[in-house]
Length: 455
Ligand code: UD1
Ligand code: MG
Image 1 (cartoon, rainbow, N blue to C red):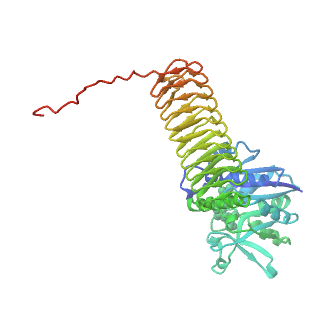
Image 2: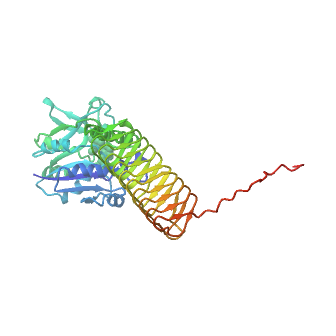
Image 3: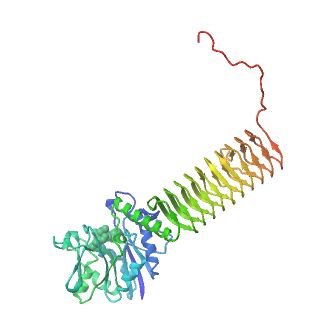
């Protein structure tokens, strides 16, 4: 059986009240449509066709990394019309699965179940929901045989009481779609060509419509407004947190962890509240993440601790390191084993050697630092002269006293020592002491100023 997928994504999404096409709004950091595409890919279809209309160019650009076949539906005349636009590109002997670009939580297991039922006749994914308002109702006849779908606007009061609804997801042999879609009319309240109308046409032709139920109401939740977007986001996050906990990760509060990308964890990782993960993040065994941390594209090796309120992006944290609280590691930072970065320290494009410490209030940028270095509080690498960036090189075992400014390009060789409060502009040799502050003068018998009369 050859499977082809059609994803409908041409609608405007008026209720989002947004200039961004609806299917590009994000859940867990990814466009809605990307979630649907990824679920479709798990079924290994022959091709994925995406029907676009509103904001077509923007949608295509956002999903450019995926092998998709784009179909333009210039005018949105209904879901039936949308599927029809894709049919010329579909092989006659394929089974077709129709998905909506705004239903992002659908799992591939449910989709597989549906596709299996659509080998000889159309099959529909249904759901029993608490509030069916606005959705197409499933009309069944004797012995539960599926007869048709009636849209909310076209339904009688009695039909509106039905709680089983059309999720919109449908699978059918391509030949059936080619046969019935051209027969679908638009004689209904919305004047649209309804895709589910192929079902009653198939029933009339003597076919038995298959159906299967979604695993939960939320699995088939569509996004039409920002409240539903939020609902879907929370559900997605809940599912991810549950999966991580099953894998052995400790999560302080699953409602206060947001993963917008992928998180890969070793054994006994522990994550405190209000943590945001973006992009690709890897945490080694025994890693602890304190409260209110943001990690974006970061790899943290075994045993390291990221303390509260730290922000890390595009960096590598070595084994047993300690970072924060209140540390900011910007792109290109690599910390060697057991390095320590303390509070109010900012680092950028720098390599910090094993066991080195930058514990308080420092800026380290474009710096190559060896092992066992100690950087005193308030040290600044002056890497920028207003035009160019320059490097600071610090050898193994260097000690930099507090409140020093290292004016790059500059080198402090192995074992070098910088006196507190120095401004270093010239290279410091191996084991040399550099002091560049004014010599202290003590004035004996000095009198404090006294208040002048009349002032
Ligand atoms: C549709 C179903 C309804 C079902 C509901 C589930 C129809 C007629 N009705 O209603 O039975 O309960 O979904 O959410 O199918 N689209 C296009 N081109 C079009 C029209 C729509 O690409 O011309 C796309 C939209 O972008 C959207 C999807 O198809 O992704 C569904 O369209 P929408 O207008 O939201 O259909 P509903 O009225 O929600
Ligand atoms: Mg809808």
